[in-house]
Image (cartoon, rainbow, N blue to C red):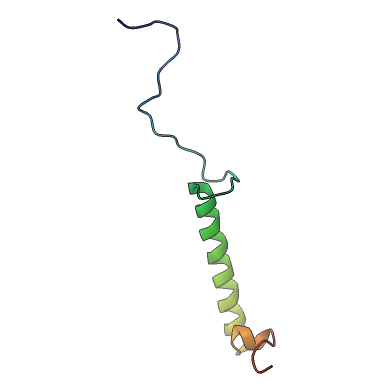
Length: 65
């Protein structure tokens, strides 16, 4: 017998959170932001090497100490 409470059942629906939410831990949105920030950091390090003619660590003076 089916209850008619007026509420729909979402038991079989997977939980989907927005990719732009700021949640901590090993949740999909945190991993998406981690990947985005890693890509920005990699691009920044590559641009430093291209435009300065030095490696990233040499540019910041961290090599040869």
